[in-house]
Image (cartoon, rainbow, N blue to C red):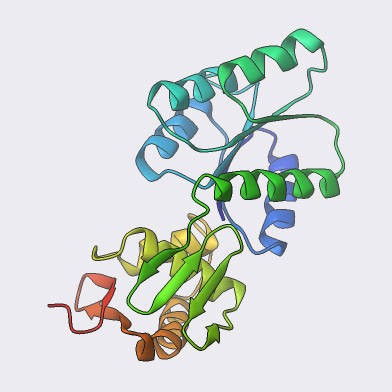
Length: 224
């Protein structure tokens, strides 16, 4: 999943970021409420983890803005506040879950997994392109002769391309989706992932087309 973390405590944010990356997620970290809200509006996310006390804009207002915009991004709120009224305020604002600091990283990771499953249930029916069927809930890409064996990074690349099928995505945009915005990643690593994924899906009527100078596009084989 692509996770947006909005947290102004740098030490905590780095620890959360590291734990989530170890689980194969890409993480975009922002330390300011207004910047976080703008990033979510512009880029979206599969999950947002939002602190309640943030510079310039509170986490509650960030979540209210997501709800007002009609978004369906699951949200977990983080806060040092433990009063019942604060938890209720967070949930009433539109948060899906609430975790009080300090917390065990294992619990955070478990809750992230649960919210990911909840997101997947919103669209349980497999989605098709060419001869491939994508099961978001199970994170499985199925072909007529069985499930494709994809690494976590290859699956993240597939999801980024599939969500924008028939649209050109730049190499930097794909890098952000796979590794998180600002990640120090050699662009050759993205090219290698694209080459590996292309080889695995080409035989099933789906390909990753290179648009010279612009980026890459997922489309059915033979499409103009």
